[in-house]
Length: 318
Image 1: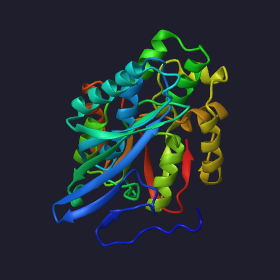
Image 2: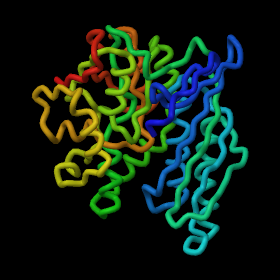
Image 3: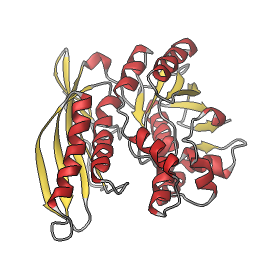
């Protein structure tokens, strides 16, 4: 990997250098294309639901850049000897349902034979270059807004261990299949220039990368971060995915824990699937308006902290 160097081109507005959610290519002064791809292994037993989760997870990167999805291409790994084709049809129907809800089309795709099933999408979207959200766009004085509760990784791990109640599972599925289109609209209305979606790197990982790329220091109010009901109890019982531990290892050198407990830090680092957006609103009034608007449409959004100053990319917990 060390031999790879980021591509540089005047029309490549966002490439690999900053580890952002998607690539962005400028077409002209008023249009830019967003390109992304993501796929996951099954997180639930129901094929149709897995398809919905995977598609929502894939298109989230477009919303994280402030864009609108245009089309998706299915990406499938399928064990043709062990799994029926009708089950794959259900997976693809789940993806189609998310595309319909998001107003974009599925225009084909590609399938390979794979002993472990995988599904996702490559998605193309559009954005005005002046309305682009990036992970390098946080500014001192921004108020941080999180648009979905945490706990997905803990709950999906509990599902695999048959430890999660039906109520907890339903709450997780509702969160994972909720699109981030309204969250992106709220971010733009709140004057955000910095945003990212919270997925496998966890809130601390994604926010830590944003701080590093934006060259700022943030404070997170631990008690203000929303959690899916039941996630804390499952984490206390040891239902923690391996990815969460790797997230903690990455963020630890740039994390000031304050008085946060090990459990609280673990929850903040929980590896998410199809999580919400975290963005920086221009001030407290804009952040409050964004949270109010999102809650009115069923989002469990919250103000979770602030960008306190320019600096070395540290995350402080309080």
